[in-house]
Length: 190
Image 1 (cartoon, rainbow, N blue to C red):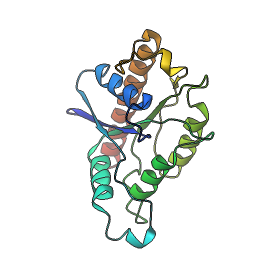
Image 2 (cartoon, rainbow, N blue to C red):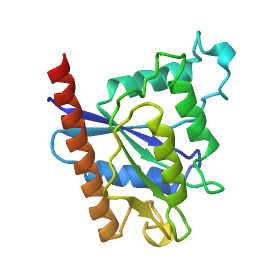
Image 3 (spheres, rainbow, N blue to C red):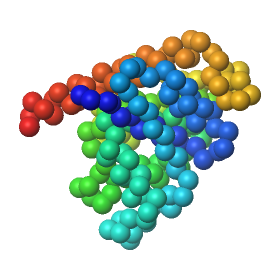
Image 4 (cartoon, one colour):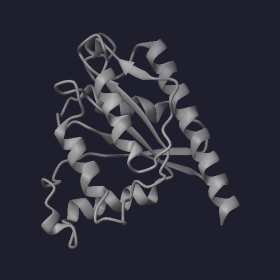
């Protein structure tokens, strides 16, 4: 493979989101030959099946970026024991119309940051359940659940916790390996 393109999707709209900061940290920890582009979910309207045949511009751009990526890195907060509505909404849009999902067979990894102790564990497990619907291979280890996030990032949003940085580095390496395996499998069946 040439350069591997990973799309980082932050599941929060908050300006100073710890999950956005985590994706920025991931950019610093990428293996050689890998690029991480970030997309935010601002401007994506609520899913409306009446509009799926003529996608809104923000949704079209989201799908374009997903399709252009070799893999996906989700960074999700946890709202009420699950994924945020904005992330689920974007996932739904990018899966439509039926038969034209941008997610199908796309390798993915999940991480999340939270001010609480569990570091988005429940949201990540729900997100894994959602991704099964698209046949997405998902990195299972390591799990990157950044609890007590306010103590792990400096006031400027830089991830200063070295063990967490190492977990993210390992997650990225596992995602890159999954991307390579997925590409090799596609080449064998082509």
